[in-house]
Length: 328
Image (cartoon, rainbow, N blue to C red; front, side, top):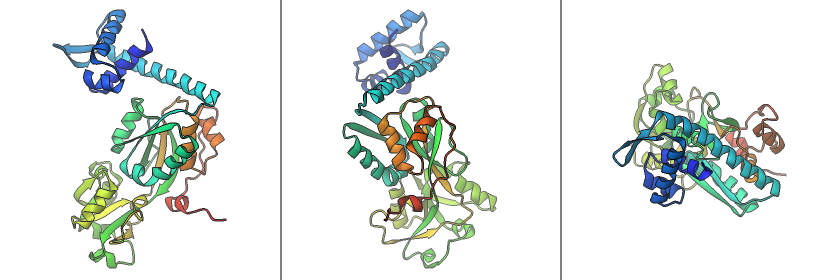
C-alpha cells in the first residue's frame, strides 16, 4: 500500500466516481489510476467500490471505512511535509482557499496581494462556491482554509477564527422610492417589495427568512445569486431591492445606486476563517490569517492551531473599523 494509491482512492471518491476526472485531478493517466486501484483492492482482499459493468456505482461499505482512514493518513502526510518546510524556512507551495464569491471579490484581494509580495513563490488558488459547498471542501481536505460568514454561532467542521463583523445593506436605484428615505427601511416596507439577495436566502434556516418570519412577514425573493455584483446588476435592471453585505458596497462604479442601512432586526454577521483540525499550517497561511485578522497576535494563532493554547479570541472588529486606513 502506498500514499499514491490512497491519494488516487480519495480522488476517485471526490470526483463523483469519475475515473477520468480523478485522473486529471491527480495528474495521472486513466489506465495508471485504474491499475493502482486494482493493486490496492488485491492487497486488501475486497472491493472498495460497487461496480456496474465497467463503471463504479458507489463506494462499498468497507471502502467507505478505508476512505475515512485514507483521508486521515494523507492529511498527516501533508502535515509532515508542512512541518518540514516550515522548519527549513521554505516558502514555496500552494495555498487553497475555499470561500464565497463576496469574500473572494471584496475581502480577500488586499490580503492575498500582501501574501504574494511576502511569499512570491506561493501560488494561491481561490475556490469560490456557495457556503455549504465551502465547508464540504474543507471536510474533504480539498482546501487549506475556508472563509465563510454566519449570523449565529461559529461554523463547525474545524477551528473557527473570527475575522470581522459586518452588517447588511439595502440597495436601490436612485430613482426608487426608498432612495428618498433618511433612515433604514422597516421589515414591513421591505416585505412589500420584491427583493434580490444571496442564494442562501432561500434556505429555511436563512437568518434573513427567520427575521422576517419572527415579525410575521414573508420576504418576496424575486431573484437570488451567489455573486454580489450580479445582485447589483439586477437591482439596476429593476428586478427588486438588493439586500447584501456591506463589504460589497463602495467598490467600483456604484454611484447610480443608493445604499441604506438594513432594518436593525436583521442580525449582525461574522466572517470566520475555518481551519481543518490537526492541520499544520504553512507560514504563508498564518500570515494570510493575520492580514485578515490583525487583532489576533500571530504567536497566539500559531499556539491555538498547534493545540497548545485554548481558542480565546479577542472581539472581532467591525468591517468599518477593519477597512479604515491607518493614520499616524
